[in-house]
Length: 218
Image (cartoon, rainbow, N blue to C red; front, side):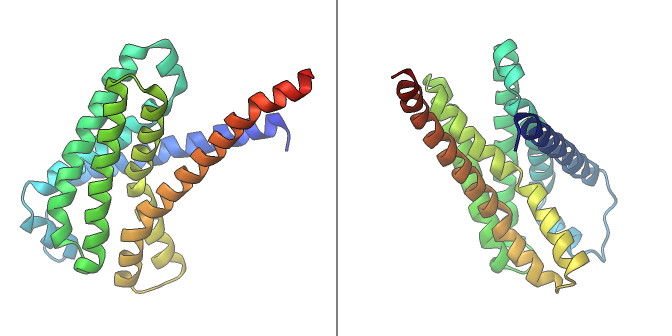
């Protein structure tokens, strides 16, 4: 595949990612202002969690809306102060959303079969983001970027969750509880696996590049 085609595919994938982030973030913010629906099982369970619901929706929505900016290389290179400011806002969103997620996990639909998946997601989300911030403060920029990529992958679990539910119910017509439990685990593990594979491939390419250059020079 040519360079132009690769660039076009990357640009298209980036645009789709941005649109999905903004769409799911908008849904999260809109949910905060929606009316309570007593017949909706999610609304009934969320009502038991009190402030955890608005905390999770606001924090996760904020992190999701800011994630594309944090991945934008142009912002990092041209406006590093803005990148740092957005980074702190993103981390604040993860902290608020992650703590809300921890509180919501015991009341998850389908019980602990899905709740355990969401609980681990919240813990790993908080941990990866904390490690990413710690590396940035220490000046280890390479490690900072790698851990923040993992953090963004976990933030994007909100997107993968909804896509999985849409396919499982709308296309495959599987029982909702079955699809929901599967989505609770796959929405973040698949994202994390994809990022780990990408990081390993990028690392291998970076290690091989000097060797190729020396061979060509010889």
